Image (cartoon, rainbow, N blue to C red; front, side, top):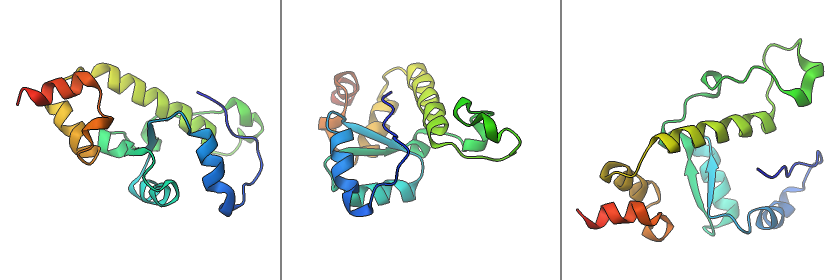
Amino acid sequence: MKKCMNYRDIPYEKLNDVLEIILKDVTYIYVKGFEKKQWLSGIIKGSKTIINLENLGCPSMKNIGITSCHYHEYRKSIIMYHCAFENVKQLKCWLEKNTQMQSSSIGRSLELYYQLEKRIEDMKLQDIAYLTKV
């Protein structure tokens, strides 16, 4: 995972340019939440496939198990804190763990097909192979 945060604000009108650079070699963008997906879709304008992790069964951030962040040790006294970098690491861990557990199947392939809004070109060959058997 590339660390792309440099701890400064980006003017909203420059966000599309920054995202284009960061995401130039990316096919899929994973987000958590419908609103985030809609918002990002409006900025990126369909150049990438955006997948809502909630549609893949991702639990609430409260249930993922973030207990601390070594970047924010000074905030240990705060019971509830939100660290974007730690959240992303935990979501990545969850995604890797759960996609490894799912092997290709007709059910998974059909689910992916509909999640990607019937864009078969964005699917892996092994998942497409199951669709052709139906």
